Image (cartoon, rainbow over all chains, first blue to last red):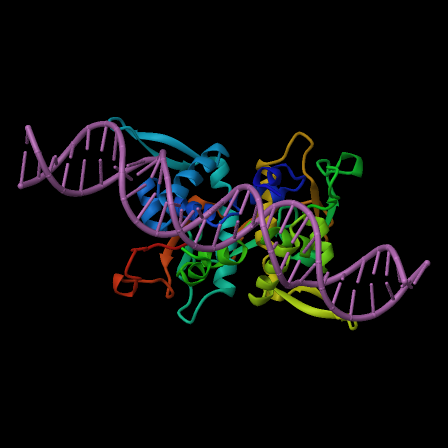
Amino acid sequence: MKWDELEEEPCSLARTVAVIGDRWSLLILRECFLRTRRFEGFQSALGITRHLLAERLKKLVRLGVLRRIPYQESPKRHEYILTQKGLDLYPIILSIVHWGDTHMVDERGRPLLHEHKGCGKIFDPVLVCSECGEPVTARGVHVHPGPGKRVAVAEMPKTKARSRAV
Amino acid sequence: MKWDELEEEPCSLARTVAVIGDRWSLLILRECFLRTRRFEGFQSALGITRHLLAERLKKLVRLGVLRRIPYQESPKRHEYILTQKGLDLYPIILSIVHWGDTHMVDERGRPLLHEHKGCGKIFDPVLVCSECGEPVTARGVHVHPGPGKRVAVAEMPKTKARSRAV
DNA sequence: TATTGACAGTTCAATTATAGAACTTTAACA
DNA sequence: TGTTAAAGTTCTATAATTGAACTGTCAATA
């Protein structure tokens, strides 16, 4: 499967993986949330090759996650800022960080602590149900086919039969 | 940066990206949450090459996300099931699906609907603060260096100076 | 005036990873 | 005996990534 095919899958997870499912995009976005905006800033913070960085930034702009805006004329320079679509990735980022904090820390503990401005406390993110407010776990969820699900084999590509999507 | 270096970064996001930050791992895990357990099941559901599937399953087992358990003798066959560490990835998966549902759907709408068994309703996941229960947004969070943060240049690798981590 | 340096990339060869297809092994089944 | 199924492994061709050097614009400095 190619990257562009991934974007077409009738699966919201696959389509999102087409955006952030590579080695660098999430790290670039981490930097965005830490207020890095410029090419050199990303490059030195991440140690990514300039070639790939240029490529990934272009991709994230094309996908509407970042916006490229000029910050000076002569020489013309641009910076990269998160769009609303990009800002909406925050729950993903925070969930990832929390899993790492829980399962991948060494003896020294968490690299970062997160303070919720609203209540002033150091917190962990918790995923809850929008309807009842209770925490959600894998076992507590049932999935149903939605309107965008590919239903019949008739609609499927000739070669392979894929039937499921999260 | 190599994949193994990523695992060593003083950053919970980078360490988690070392686990799930490739083209296939998240898709394999999606299948796990949909109760796929066997090699052929993953292969036909995803269209991944057998070579890479074998490789990725090995990696996920090595990292403690999946467990490989025998389900029959002669010929010896194994299946792959989520460990607790793997089950804990559910909030990440669900956040990713929700972002895709919000920003990557086509005219036909969501591929899947999620029902919360607890309250019986179709829901969206919401990320809230563990301390006050209010929803968390990027702008509502302050980060502080934690105990596991790499502090001084003295401790850093010779080549590059990286100072930040989510 | 000439030189240096910052910034934002681009170019190119060498290495690595992934895709696609065929092959292997063990054992049940017709 | 021949076929099928599951769970891989092996192989070659193609695509992606790395590492390093190079380009162009302008400002500041010697």
